[in-house]
Length: 357
Image (cartoon, rainbow, N blue to C red):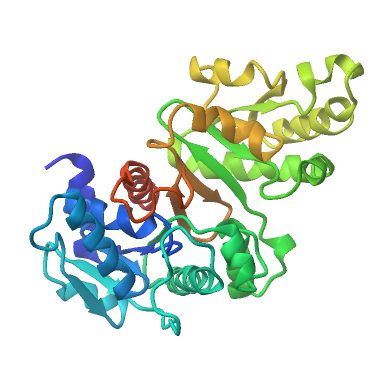
């Protein structure tokens, strides 16, 4: 057994269980979950799916049809609490229903609906609270759809903000006392974002001294545990050529550079601000362990260009481990049997590593 699979099996035996949320039931999340259980049974030992059993059964039928028919690839076993996982038989799909009503039956594949958004959100809320209570060791989230969340009346645009609010409520503090950041990582790059799901205009306004310094502090603390040494952090500039000494904007001089200096004074190994059009090339060559980007697309386009099948999203700053695949709901192929589980499998592997970091 490989070291990774040995770690997974040992985690399952010791009760280090992972909660895996189903994602939007109209998207590819449930199918990728079924495929992950089918193709990586040892890795999936000790993984509990949070969602509706019928959603997973439908996904299993899709996988069955894509394989040419025959017996369902995995039987769904319905659990009532995480501890039931200890007695769950092998080669099955353990599912815990968070109790969301389905008055209209199963959501249609590839369609935005309030019901699908509610089901996805309730699964995340249940799993997050279980993780915060210590019932599971980590949380892995299949993709949800932000428009469906909004239709369901969820006040947060995505996983990161929803989990931040749950963690803050659990700790009895305000959101400002629970700053979190998104990191996207693959085998070649890691990037952490100063701002996440906001408009570009709002993202520019979010480039403040406090936000940049908080991002550097969270990145330093999180990767120190993962790497076992201080990470080498590069900070991308906001403007072309990192402002060119003030010719293309003063954010680098007035905001980013002072935050970098403050992070260095705290012991962080930080370089920057660096021209954003070359910083990722330098990171891929091994000069840096991670790049701090000023806004969503500046950070995520380079990582996703290298292939979403290997990318993993990690939320930094939470009092729990949370990872997710580097792709969305893919409504255009949902229900066709074409979904690739590779990124979800990488997210599960990353969660295992973070648990033991």
